[in-house]
Amino acid sequence: MPDLSASPFPVLTLNEAAAARVGRGHLWVFANDVASATGSPQNGAEVSVRTAKGEVLGTGLYNKHALIAARLYSRKSESFTPELLRERLAAAIAQRDRFIPGSTGRRLVFSESDLLPGLIVDQYGSVLSIQLLTLAMDQRRDAVVEALRQLLSPAAIVERGDTPAREHEGLPQVKQVLFGEVPELLTVDLDGLQMRVNPLEGQKTGLYLDQVENWRLARQFAPGRRVLDLFCNVGGFGINAAKAGAEYVRLIDSSELALSEAVLNASLNGVTEKVKAKASDAFQYVRSLPEQFDLIICDPPPFARSRKQLETALRGYREVNRQCLKLLSPGGILISCSCSAAVSHADFDKMIAISARDAGKTVRLLPGGVQPLDHAPLLAMPETQYLKTRVVQVI
Ligand code: SAH
Image 1 (tube, rainbow, N blue to C red):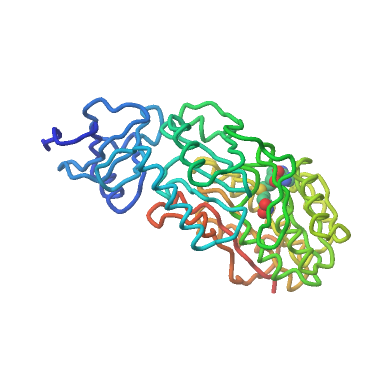
Image 2: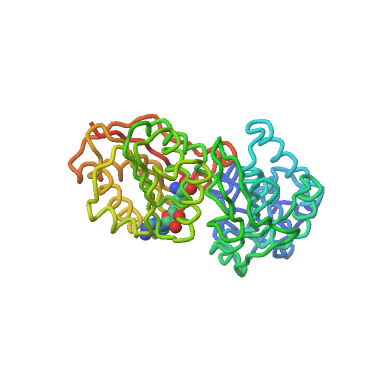
């Protein structure tokens, strides 16, 4: 037996396969990875994660009620103190300041990728919108708010915990203003586009910040073209396309609220004339074979939240992608996205290939989109590489 008396924390000893995976840089310990637990680990508190030989793999935060029993935040043996939290936040902010300076709409903290598992912080101008997705982070709400106020002096901090992810940790969904006052009219400049943000009522934390860089693809391919922005949310792709000189742009989303913001964004950017918005189920809309387009953006919500839902999700993607490909003119371009972590890049490419075959079209792959710098995934954790954006052209 390894000598555990030296550990400052309760110890989770992993089985061999899990120890190898965590040793390679994966930061999650699943409940069934644990061969033994000693020293009474406490919910939300530190645990030392070790191999069967007693070697330290790192320190994590524990939740005995979750499928992910511990999430590592360090490769060493160290406490998760308010100082550590503050240092990690400062490092995450410095990383964005270095690579995306001047942006007023960006993700400042991306959970595991910033070694702050369970914490998301998005910045919209003077307002921060945060998510505390684990029990451990939920317990540290006050420390997070305090550190963010010290580092950034925001006008307001909003918590958007209205996501099912919290339920996996045994936490209730919450949506609240944690500090300050949210301005009624908040506008941010996103890569040259003026966008209204509603941190309390918008989807996710207010906007889909992960797509901002991919909106450039719409600018690149839009000039002179007829454009369809399917699942447009507040119109990021479509309004960029209109601004770049599209002939016209159709915006489709099932959410009336998102569409009304999209219409507002069109006017903020002086492209109202070019944009037609319609509240509709995207599947029904494309099935009615409305008209031909030269550029279609298809960015559905995550159909699969787990591997179990994968088959059903892929069927949904196939159906809508097939219809989009049918609607494209010769030489037309489809920008197809998936934000389901359960769908791998390989699954996604295969899905597009099958959709093209079913639509009777041959497509070539053009240089594609990215998961942007402020959402940079961890190489050793495929779970963090959730966003796929492919650009294909009908030959
Ligand atoms: N492209 C957007 C993000 C899209 S998120 C951007 O770049 O910002 C997915 C969107 O799909 C959400 O706005 C949601 O309201 C919408 N949606 C979900 N189900 C839908 C359906 N069946 N038909 C149309 N829109 C749908």
